Amino acid sequence: MTAQTTADNQVPELVDYNLFSSDPVLRGAVLRAGAGWQEAELLRQGAEYGSEASLRMAEDADQYKPELHTHSPAGERIDYVKFHPAWHEAMRIARHNGMTNLPFVHEGKPGVWAAYGATLYMHAQIEAGSTCPSTMTKASIPVLQRNQALLEALWPKLLDTRHDPRDIPVAHKHSMTLGMGMTEKQGGSDVRTNTTAAVPVGHGPWGEEFEITGHKWFFSAPMCDAHLVLAKTAERGASCFYVPRWRPDGSKNAIHIQRLKDKVGNRSNSSSEVEFDKAWGVLLGEEGRGIPTIIEMATFTRLDNALSSAGFIRRAFAEALHYARHRVAFGKPLVQQPLMAELLADMALESQAATLLALDLAARFDSQNTLDVAWRRMLTPVAKFWNCKRAVAITAEAMEVFGGNGYVETGPMGRLFREAPVNSIWEGSGNVMCLDVLRAVSRNPDDLFVLLDYLDEHAAGEPVLQAQLQQLRAAFARAPAELEVQARRITQQLALCVQAVLMLQHASAQAAQAFIHSRFAAGWGVVVGAQSGCTDAAQLLQEVWAA
Image 1 (cartoon, rainbow, N blue to C red):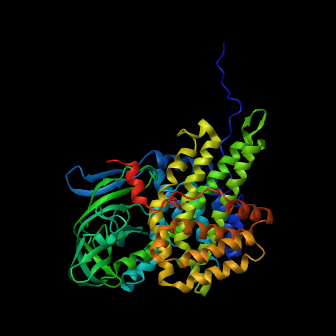
Image 2 (image 1 turned 45 degrees about the vertical axis):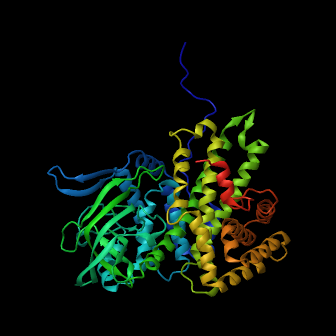
Image 3 (image 1 turned 120 degrees about the vertical axis):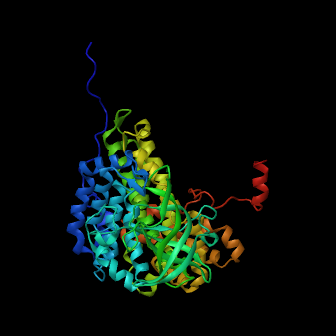
């Protein structure tokens, strides 16, 4: 008997497709922002990202994880991380496509931030690990502008579109990457508990120089050419420093990598724990104002979290739809089964709303218009919170569409599912984002009314949506203690209201009405932690945990 050599009813791989031309929501957002000048390039990128070569590259980058080499064969401390060639190919594509500098290279062009957002959104769908050092490099530029002498020296390296993987002093490289070192083991997000110390050692050509001693519990990515680091000075406290891998004199800086993190996902990217032993650094910004200085960098990377999570949702939906169109079950394609069609339609709404939320936010990032400033302050943490949360849920649903075929590492869904949670954690977890929304309102209360007035205006004729906006106004009028407890619920409600208005503006009437009447219906799912229903959380916790 001859063994069967062909498999029936198996779905062909989604490959060799264009991520830009196949995504009318993305394309429409780019053109509305005025970035038509970049359309041909984004079409080229879309074909590149969807090619079989790029998909194979991404698989290899995930499979062959970075390796830490702390010492050379001769015993010299080198703190070197070795990457598979696939990682360097992903970094090459990211750099060439503008992920490290596009908004600043083309500063002033219409829609430049939307054009940047489109690239990141597509890149994240294929190889998300390389987005970390690429977007941090871009996000460091506004902070480096606080030290003009340093920026002038680094600017040619930041502008260059060639990936340069060599571990040598920046002065001898074509281009450079930058990372961030904020959190420490005793505090995590509470960076005011940091203990890393900075001692002044004099004044150099780039400003005040310091020696830094201490540690960082998450240091991404250690092979970047430099990092922006939080450390405390004795006189003024937390300050921000530029700390390179190599000192300006060409010697190795005293940044010792202790180990690489063994992460659930984002495996291609190296995250690490490091110790500083009088590492050389130069002050960025005002001494004692390090937290707000480095948070400026985090604001840009939080936008990137929202964009890349929208990309995860898009990839999950695209893979699920492709599978359902080609897989036959119970006598007809899955996509024609009523319950599956309902699920896919709901996923389509999620993808459309997430893309609109992220790209609209990006388009406003270079505007000083009163509305746009308020939109950025209020909605950057909102978009990060909501898109990142939804990405986890939607990638899980997409995996279920595949059934057992999705729960294996030989297909795309395992890596996508493992990748999704990182954006909720990186640059501030969900609770931190919700508290940042409240903080934004307390610092700039007029921003809330500017935003809500705009939403009200565009919700005219939609009583369901108008009622939600009235509830939001009432919610924000509560006492601070009550408001904090409800922060997740309020943030979710604000995210949905903004998405509903964007759908009314830019989606079909059918899609907009479907979104409004489903997302605000009684019983529609809320994010965990939005409302426990109890009046004494401590008592409830004691009741179910007896330790």
